[in-house]
Image 1 (cartoon, rainbow, N blue to C red):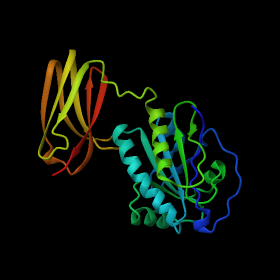
Image 2: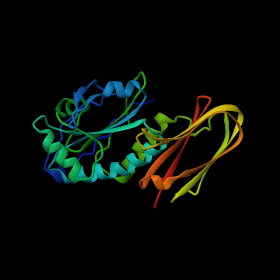
Image 3: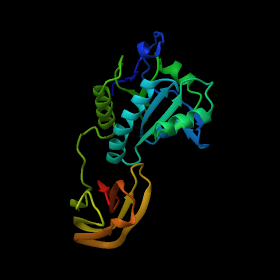
Image 4: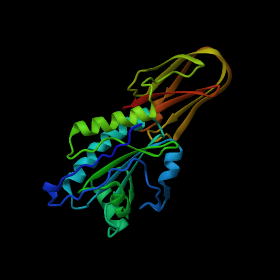
Length: 265
């Protein structure tokens, strides 16, 4: 996969001077404690095959807010499509920022990315030329930087970013149904008080159905049954869960099929 970097440069708006840089083709290792007090390792994320979205920002930068909020929409779609495989970080571009300042910025501006300080080393490595700088990384053995350089933020940049992440996580462009499952339907979707999950098994299988949040964490085990066959229909009380986007994950003999479910009361 070709190496790429996304740099959103708002020098004119910020009064910043760009400096030249060399585009990197691979990620740099970075282990740190985030501003929520949790240990993080970018290489561990990448080794797990995840796609990472790194935003480097200035707290006084209004274009950084605009970029971050637009990324929120992109992230939500990708996290629903690829549960647990997309992770986002928001780094203060300078080592002088405190976690108090970082947390205040992400909270005030509705940013859900994991907050982190001390971003100067990575900014220098990836060649940030003004703020915000956005870097997209793809995991696996190569730890690739995904994308091509951009000199200004536009909606089309975000569209291209999302396409690169999708191509990395699903290079065939096909969301295949698990080999044990012939079809799957969720209805109604969006759901209010109840949703029916129906699918057909091609062979006898042990079937486990989980409800996941968009980050891939299990919210509830909906069903766990042995030696199932034929058409399976499960009715789920969605009134038990808060409004939002979820993932229905069906594991049939180890083959996992997932579909997005929206709950609206």
